[in-house]
Amino acid sequence: MRYDRAMALPRHDWYLKEWLRSLGKTQQWVADQLELQKSKISRKASGTTPYDRDDINAISALLHLQPYELLMHPEDAMEIRSLRKSITLAAERRAAYRTQPDDWAEKLVERKKV
Picture (cartoon, rainbow, N blue to C red):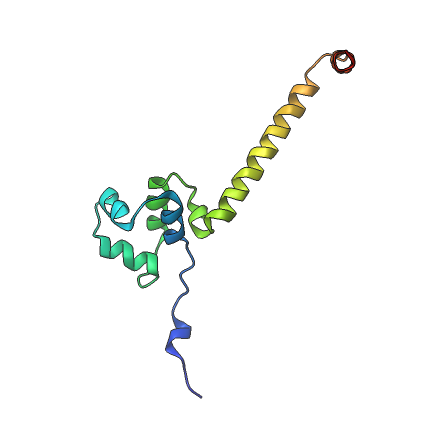
């Protein structure tokens, strides 16, 4: 039985390249901001060198992302952000509605009739 060494290598599943592309940033910019060599960022972005928690925390802070968002495609992360925003807005509206006096809804209906 033949053993494929590549199968044992860890899979690097973060989306640094896609995030940089979507934010209009470069690997060189990240390297400059974090005072690292570009080659180190390039190796981590391509999966040649594994990333660790410190990498995720530093880069996510630099890009103004939540750390877990680097592990998601930017489109997916932005969709989740949009859903959260909608849910928060709906909850705020519901809370505002509940704090209104009882006749508030009736007045609103009367205004719409006019």
